[in-house]
Length: 241
Image 1 (cartoon, rainbow, N blue to C red):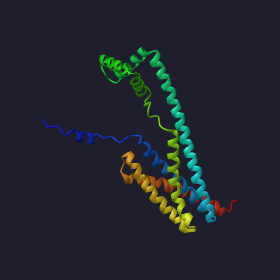
Image 2 (cartoon, helix red, strand yellow):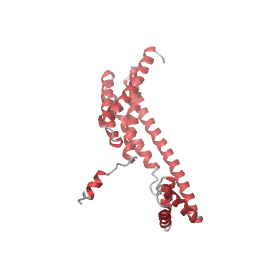
Image 3 (spheres, rainbow, N blue to C red):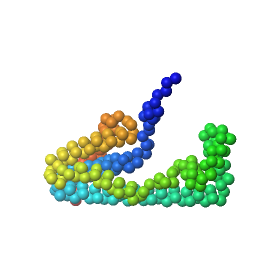
Image 4 (cartoon, rainbow, N blue to C red):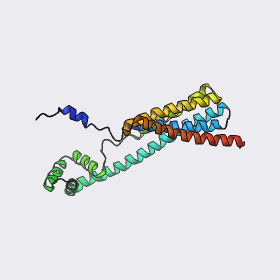
């Protein structure tokens, strides 16, 4: 019987990483920056202040938002990493002082997944022969983590800062070279195009149709911008100071 070449199977069964790593975080960071600053800039523009005020608001939103995202990502990743390190230390201690109990625990995990008891015991025994492999196996099976892949808080923070700043600077550009209605229209156009591109980028990870993701991102950005513009216009028209 003829079997398809191995390469064909590899192509058919290739799965994209579900978490998407840095690229996925970058797409979401750009999306956050874009929606935040489009809304902020158009909200300010709706009150019809001087162009310098809108520029200042947009710049403040970019810097404050980027630092906020960066700090939040760093604290979150740092806390998660410290938690995982603590769990790994406890697991290492258990492997050192009660290896037999850990072997039975690992065998029980394999049995719960449908492996025959005798085979599960042999697999657990083989895994426990090497301390490094035993720790990696227990961490993966019990905690759902890989000891060598806990992530870098600093790298995550820098990436978040850059991605947010990129998304936030796009709607600000028109106000650096123009003012008034022309700048408002340019911000709307740039924001809409950027939203469509970000949505298409997101579809690479969700596997949804690109036009669906693009239109969804555009709709979210449009609603946020319309609401803030309306509030800014209402506040400006009321003469509140």
